[in-house]
Image (cartoon, rainbow, N blue to C red; front, side, top):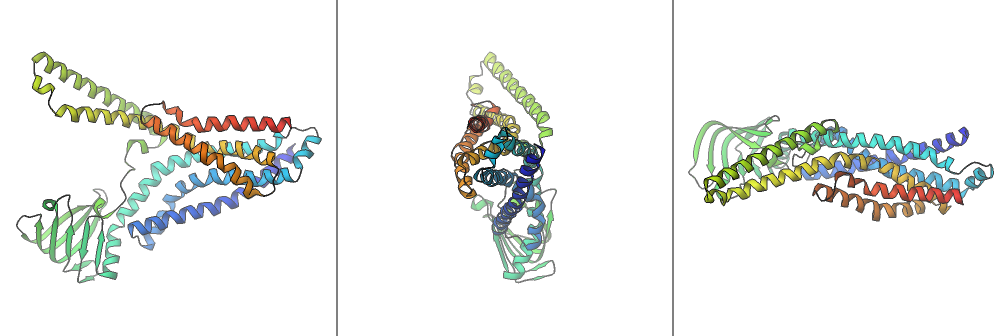
Length: 394
């Protein structure tokens, strides 16, 4: 019994390790290339992003690679009639599956942790690195091409002398012509204020035009520009549902308390207006904005309540996948592991993920409770247990 367990664990570990390293490397490279192309990043910045992308890459690659490893190992065991040999020795064939389920359970816990780190630490790190590199990216492009254009910012210079932009022409587009900003200066320097998330453009002998207003001359002037204007990545890391799991409970309690307080305040104001006969106030358009704000708080609460379930359900997809992949590979008795993987991945693609997305969408909309996110996992657990029962019967 111990020999069989060690054998299955060894085969699973070898296959899983090779597949995991390859797939994780591929996902990280795809992410880095995408960010480099979108944000026009330098090589140094790309290297700084690697640690922050690893948790996200691993949270995607671990479920897929453990499924692949289960298909390879159990397909080979079944095709070599090792399952028949185990049965002939009077041992239940489920002994072969138990080591895979144990590994999948442990990997599920690890994936939950990686999901938590990727959302609460990885996203914030990527955002910070990209924003902090904005000035370096601008200088690199200005030195190479003499101009920079991204987001709402356009910069053109005669040349770059160290950190000084010589004769820069800077345009910041606004929502309308009256919000636009045009700057001409003899020289300028760009500094990143990471805490305030701003680019500080330090101008010398500048001529500034705001919208259609008259131009103004300044000998020295610092112009703040939001870093979001030169980045296509939005800061989603500060949203309350992107907190670590350990902080979710307190955040949800605080959000609920604020929501109850807002509702009581609005109810008291409405009652006061009703008693005073203030029908104008009761029908004022401001009530629409207030009710919309409260409704958005409700949806934020639904998202907060759903997020812990989503992270745990995503993590335990490892166990669900192996519980499907291992018995299916044994029942199909194919040595061709690619066929096994394709046949096992088909129900995951067309059943598990649609159920997961349906549960997440309905829970975030407040139509279903948060634990409905587990719908796909529960269905796969049931199917997997049925397949294991079929193996024992055969």
